Amino acid sequence: MGNLKEGYIQIYTGNGKGKTTAAMGLATRAAGNKYTVYVVQFLKTGNTGELESAKKMAPYFNIFRFEKTKGFFWTLNEEEKQQLKLEIREAYNFCLQTIKNRTCDILILDEVIGAVTNKLLTEEQIIYLMDNKPNDMELIITGRDLPEKIAEKANLITEMREVKHYYNEGIPARKGIEF
Image 1 (cartoon, rainbow, N blue to C red):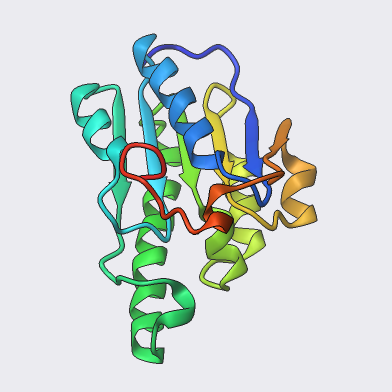
Image 2: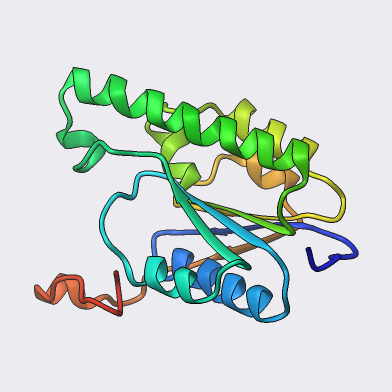
């Protein structure tokens, strides 16, 4: 591990593009400085470029996914939602163990706020992680619709605000840019 002297809590939120991109940029920078980065991705199952990048930067850059359920949350039937809830619980338990065992310098909870919004995790569970992270571990949280109680605990919050987006012109997500 890279011996991070003091770790803070950062949140990337808002309705604009770039929350995960910012977190992955930080992960790349940290891995390049030989800090161990764990990224736990919530509500993401598709193939994305960061998965391949992380493989090339191992052992410093590591991405973990626990979900097998495919599709957007609002498209899932009740059985699929229950399965997803179990998968999210497994991811959360992994985060708890990572904090307890101090197995990384930087822990990124990518789209964890979406898991809270969809009632797959509670605000209290996220606050518990925030309160119990080691002083020398950086915690990065991403997702839109940031709850106030979680915001109060952060040291840094960056809001991505959509001003203009080409999705509105019918341009779909592009490989290497959005995924």
